[in-house]
Length: 260
Image 1 (cartoon, helix red, strand yellow):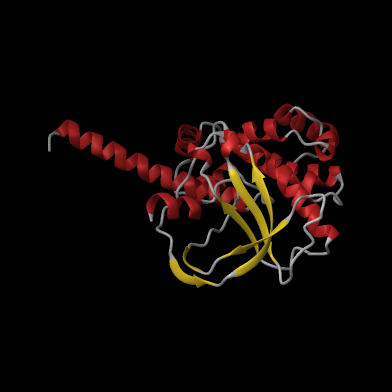
Image 2 (cartoon, rainbow, N blue to C red):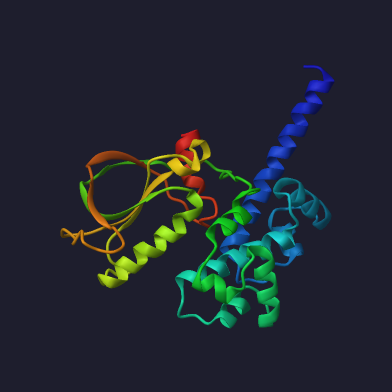
């Protein structure tokens, strides 16, 4: 191997090692958004000097670590506004790191084009989706995941079909939650499933299909305003990998589909 090729190989290996470190630190950030995420402590976490950490984080993710944390906290706040309506907007803003409501409103409007109160009433999911997915980074788990083969039993489900842009899946989720509340099926009842028929990476937005489901014991009344229907997941052999961390990027799914 010549020296030029050797240098290229070493550079690639170093970059891969660096990406693994940044992957681990981003997973740590997303799992600890309520903690005091000091840059120096994050640099220590992945074994880098503060200067090298900042440079590598920017190169890998396309943003500073401060902006990454701010975006992650704003995203969590946006979902709490819609799916945790009993919480006060001021408390959600405080959890996102904003001491004053005015600062939270200003940052939220800049990110999503709506004030928090309006987003809670009528979220503009298309703009929200573009904000978080146009330039999102795809991180893979550094260590290989354990995959188990199981025999999945035939399961009756209540399903709400989503057919259209992936950016509108949260609107479908809101309708499904509304149906569950009306039928007194709480978060601790039944197993929740997302059944994907298409991959949004290689599907036209209008052709994207997904079922949002919960297991049920009995037949449901099909005459409901949300359009929830009964379906059956057939008994089958399944490969299972466990994901732990943010829903921003479910690495277990990518690992199963693209690597395993």
